[in-house]
Length: 139
Image 1 (cartoon, rainbow, N blue to C red):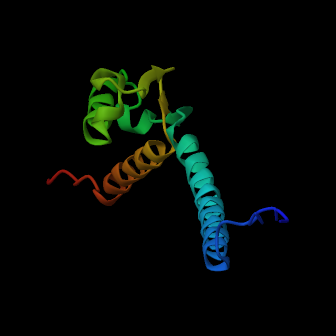
Image 2 (spheres, one colour):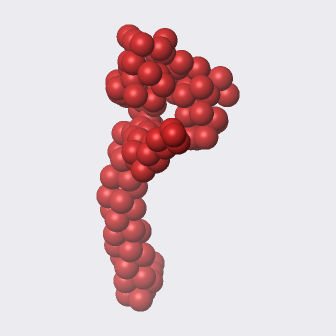
């Protein structure tokens, strides 16, 4: 009697199962790649917006009612920190900071998004003051 060697199947899986695994891995890689590209780019933009940068603003026209008056920074600082993202300022545990800088300027360290809001508020205050014309005294 001749002994025959048992034949071994090299592949235990059918062709359909192998195709499924390849398709699954391709979809996984494609999803990872798309998510990585989009997530990385948006993460970079988010990091840029979260890093505070210091900007100096000329506010002499807003902190003095007359050119010879002393500067009143307190009311401007309270208005800005109380109305624009209050939780981002150091008083509330955030990283934003605002300090008088010279007689007519403030230096504000804040994120880019908040800096943009500050610019808009200062411009709207100036626009509002420009629209209000002082009345002439009646004779």
